Image 1 (cartoon, one colour):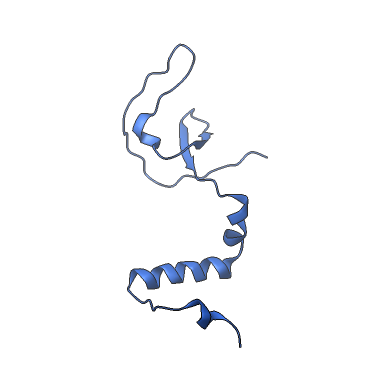
Image 2 (tube, one colour):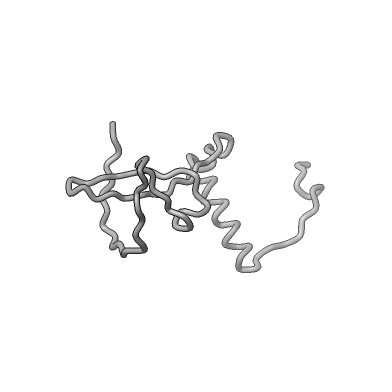
Length: 95
């Protein structure tokens, strides 16, 4: 089954490119840092490039576990606000 993406965002033109004789398109800095993109085309023939970030399988469990990902986000938020304390590994051991 094909993915259907409903786009409600506004887009602005960020440049123009030429397709070479082998039907390749160079995007340069536009997608720097991404290795994969998902392509969408609407009924008018317009094309949307959606950058894709892939997650290693060993880390996928975190994103499938709402409680765990919320704990991580809360910890990152606390750390960014300076809400941290020093712990020693011995303090984490159960009695």
